[in-house]
Amino acid sequence: MERGAKEKNHQLYKPYTNGIIAKDPTSLEEEIKEIRRSGSSKALDNTPEFELSDIFYFCRKGMETIMDDEVTKRFSAEELESWNLLSRTNYNFQYISLRLTVLWGLGVLIRYCFLLPLRIALAFTGIGLLVVGTTVVGYLPNGRFKEFLSKHVHLMCYRICVRALTAIITYHDRKNRPRNGGICVANHTSPIDVIILASDGYYAMVGQVHGGLMGVIQRAMVKACPHVWFERSEVKDRHLVAKRLTEHVQDKSKLPILIFPEGTCINNTSVMMFKKGSFEIGATVYPVAIKYDPQFGDAFWNSSKYGMVTYLLRMMTSWAIVCSVWYLPPMTRETDEDAVQFANRVKSAIARQGGLVDLLWDGGLKREKVKDTFKEEQQKLYSKMIVGNHEDRSRS
Image 1 (cartoon, rainbow, N blue to C red):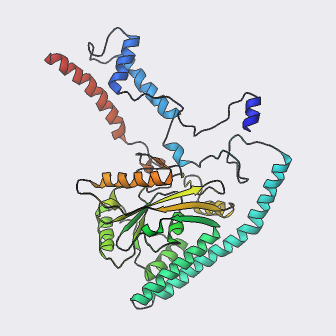
Image 2 (tube, one colour; image 1 turned 90 degrees about the vertical axis):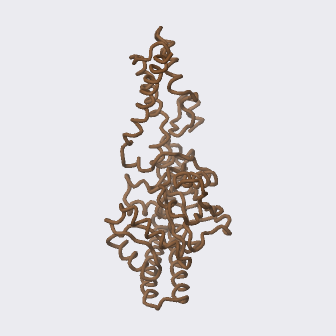
Image 3 (tube, one colour; image 1 turned 90 degrees about the horizontal axis):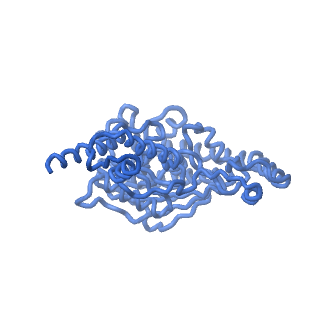
């Protein structure tokens, strides 16, 4: 494709090319001074009042943000440089050769007619054993034997479910695996992050109570292991959530809690803002970095585009789910550090280890509009510049 584009002198479409716009690290005041200097005889120092030409600064910044947007592109699937014989993963792909088309057709037959039925059978086996096994273990009296059985029933069932996705996982630094009384935090790309981690360790899950099949699984799991499930009305009560989590981590006999602080799925290229709630508790935090290889199947769940059933079907018809998991050394909150700073420090460590872009933006922008506070911040900077210059001139 690249060779053909060069021959025809065409531009290849690459939406994630870095450095689209060259930006100099200058302040708002310096840039407006430059605009006034080039387009008007009135300098900012001499004319602290509003100038119509100041609008150009905000127009240019808005256009730059739209053209070189580093936020919303994190909520769509990562485009591959080469085609992996799955769906159209490159916008430049049309028709290349008959041989490649035949190979793609054979791939469809193998994935849908051979791999998919086997994977569905394994998935139902794993889920069925999880419900039956945890229900039976739940009737046993509390003690070491029940705890032992619960751990191994969960582990066995999660590993069967991982096989249903043909997941090829490489775990690094297992000596740093989360321990009882701690909190495991990880970047979030897909719902299968849970079974990726739970197939190599024991965790207590945290989440909202659901209905249907998910509700049946949750009720069965909580009988065998002290998972933390919240009712829909309780989720928004931050104090109640913090209290339940604190009570759990203070009991050193209970399994570490598994939390994804981003609160939404990001497309495996970056880590976005961590919610501070799980970092206010004061427990030891065990960071985990998860990085998928999209060459064999894209694990990212675009929840605004695909439902859960459609997403799982796409996963089961991929060639494989290949990923690497790094267990980072445990981290604790320092005395002069607040919860937000601690969360950012943990996030930076995960991004650095996983080779991901560290972003300060909230993943909630996936479904919500930008908060008015961001707009007001720019308005305050501009008004402070105008009013500040005016006051300085009055004093002089």
